[in-house]
Image (tube, rainbow, N blue to C red; front, side, top):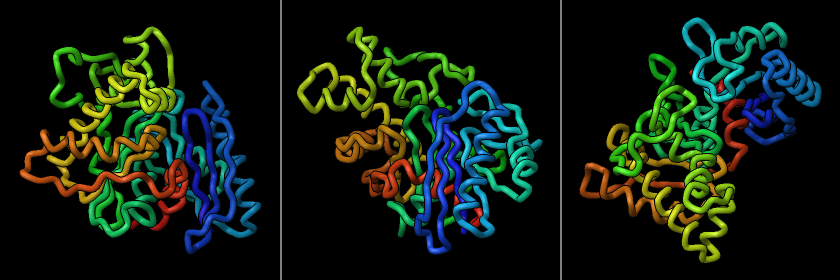
Length: 298
């Protein structure tokens, strides 16, 4: 059997999958805040509990924000207490078995490419737009990590074709200004609405208000769609994937799947665009399922 762990900023989710990919058990706990050792302990306890439920030896794969550098230290995580820590080494020591780790967006993309919305497509670009903004790339069923293990760090490039009122943009946690993540994450959508209205709504509430005829909410969501269309058009121009699968909380906004492909046509360097924009098959379970599948990679 296979255990997958999705280590997020607010929750740690674990799953047990049978060899045929069938879900056997799942559990979610809150992520301890501000203390690296407590986070390690939470992951170890959840993994140990799942292994006991499985009742047999299991492989363990873990999806994390950020990625490991060549020294085995985590970097680029928006759960900043993980940065600079030997998380793989510490988990293997505590669990007393080999563990595979990959970026959470990689795990999402792998899950959707293997048995989700991306089945049948050669190149899958899996996007997470939630608390942060990231992506993973799967080619012919295999993750493309890149020479520096940063393939898919799309959220930390500048927003392409920026308009005058978008330049230079807000400061990102990574230290740069105007990253795609500062425009396209859930918090970024909420911030945009608050700046125009003076009121704080979540991304989901903004989408609901737009559906109910709130003109300002519809305006904010339309601007978000144009930004996402431009950002994805730059991906198509570079990678030309067969499909793009959206994940994270904002992937539940149904109007995206009709409107964004209409908008990105003006920015893709082609007379036609055949790339499919798809919702996830496994919803917010894709990350944890993909983590369990890391041992099936070459």
